Length: 216
Image (spheres, one colour):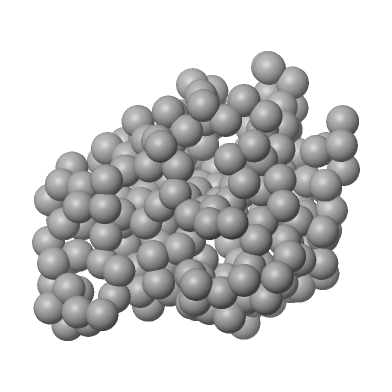
């Protein structure tokens, strides 16, 4: 079953952010075989867990056209999801592999790859309507897993909540006014794992929390 894409996703050739469009076009010239577009969501449309990332990686999702697919962060994320019983099949760093997510959807707060892997505040704001529409349409979601502070803050602002009421921290847990949950994790990037900020057991702990609250 193809789990790539959702009706609320941004169009592949979205033109909302001038800087991101220019960067995307530059990459299309350098890497014509890459996806080079607004990356769609990936996963179960009836998911109880929504994994919220920051933005596509240049040679990861921007190359393959699937969130977290093709770079180190994807290795950590999909291995963890499989161990937690939230993915099946074989992850081969390719959008055409046999990987399937189980009751899980992955999205990014910014759908196009940003220069230096750093989206600006206005770019997060421009992409917010797509995230908001998706949150509204996915009624079964019980838990949000925010990967990193930008994802955490972007999610809270999309939900209309105050950042000061829901401080970010690894394995921080927040109950939202509607009874849903947010679990935070440091982003599963190579930088964070190489520096020791995030270890595999730490990431597995965050996923275990998600599984626990999904069952409520």
